[in-house]
Length: 398
Image 1 (spheres, rainbow, N blue to C red):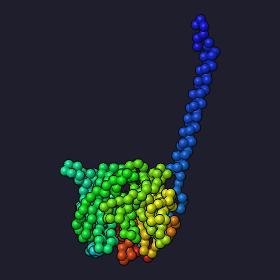
Image 2: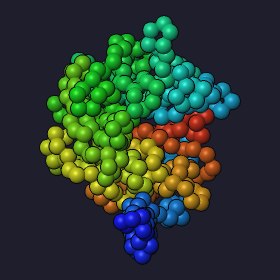
Image 3: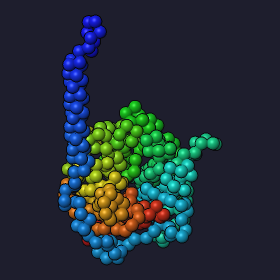
């Protein structure tokens, strides 16, 4: 500081310097306090352990042996030394009048442009040789990977096609839905078409991973989801076999719960429930009391989820059955997709693990589940990304 005549005021200058330093220290301390609080909040949100009852892998049953109890049989759809593609994933299964049909996506690796949709049929004498039925070709010089096929056998008087939904695009945040139909139980396919767009969700996808349900009026309700603006769940409803669509939702904001890939369950009193994969370490749920028109706020279940696909089905006896990975991400073995399990519930709220299908190093994931006319349960899932495994279970023995 300089006063009249050029004389300095060293006392004032020092005082100001000390004041500035104190403010800087105060600001720095305040900032660090905020940082510490934020760290504690983030830890509370993301690191809070799941309930003890669902955390420990040792509390689920030991790995089941095919041919014992409810676990009737297990087989690979194709042997590991005869793989049609280097990798495969995301299977689906349906029952037709002549047997079973399974589909999956396969190619060099997920996201590669050679990835297409493959199908195998089983008419009671084992699984047939896989056949590629769809690719992501868009014109002569553009090809995209295919993703997440979903098979669904429609039950409509006079018209009961087998529908195949799948996605095409560079990534899950930018893909679009395509469908085809078959009138000979999956031997041949026709009427390939894109599903279109909707202002609420962008590209329509149909069922994003898990099978739809057919309502009493014959219309089809598809559990779907999008990933381009957070992970959000919605529904796509069609009354004319996919020619036109109505979108319901999204039902979550993608922030409290980032959730995708719902399975739709039904109850005798008319209620519906969805179970979803989530980014929060647990399966999430929502309920509807008006036939799927509106849905409750999404909440957590007591089922762990390592950010991996699940599937569930309402059994003919009214119970609910889910196939899932009873693990969390990270930590010791088993974790992630090292273990695949089945759990049942009579009310959709309390779940009891009843079978462990896999527990080993490698990936066992993305199950699909149906109950056949003979009441047997059929499950397909990714087996180490090298084949698709087919398991048959007897729910009467759970």
